[in-house]
Length: 239
Image (cartoon, rainbow, N blue to C red):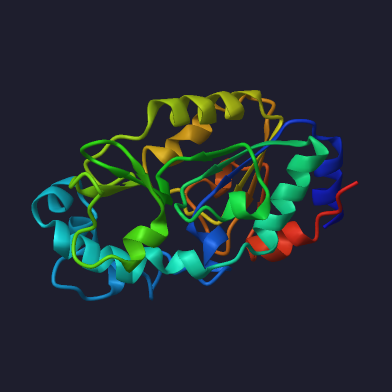
C-alpha cells in the first residue's frame, strides 16, 4: 500500500464517493448482490415498494417493508472505512464525502462535510406541518406513522420517481470539481444520476477506484484495487 499512502500524502483536496459496499462491512445488506434486497421475494418488487407512487397509494405496505428492511441500519456501527475517512477529514486533506447510502454512518464516525445523495433514514418529516421526527418514532410506530398534527410522516430518502436534492447535487459536483484525488469506493457505479457525477472531475484529478468486483469505469481509473474498502482504507497512514 506504499503507493496509496504516497497518494494520500501528496494530495491536498481529497473527495470520497461511496456506495453500498461501504456499509455492507457494517452488516447492512445492499440491494443488488446475490443476497441483496432485489434478489429476495416480496409481494411487490422492492423497486415498486420504494417508489413515490407506492408510498402515496399504499403507505402502510410501504412502511411494513421500510421498517423491516430499511431501518436495520439503526443498529449498525461505523466500520474501518467510515472511521478512516473521518480521520482524514480532521487532517484537512479530505474535503468531502459523497455517499449514496442513507444510514448516517459517516456522520456517526465523525465526518462533517457529507453529501447524502439519496437522503437519510435518520430524518423524517410530517407532510402536513413539516415537523421533524426521528427514526425511532418511525421504527416503533404501528401502521402509518403520524405527526401530532395528524399528518403522515415521510422519510427523507429519495424514492424512485423522485429527483435528487439540488443543493446536495450542486455541493457534490463542486467538491468533485475541486478535488485533486477522487476516491471511489464500494460502488459498482450502476445507479444514475449519482454515478454520473464523476464526470465532473478535472483532467488532472487522480481517480482511485476501490471495489471488490469490477466496474464499468475500471479502465478509466488511474489506479484500481479489487479488495475490501474497509481494509484498504484502514491501511492508510494519516500524519
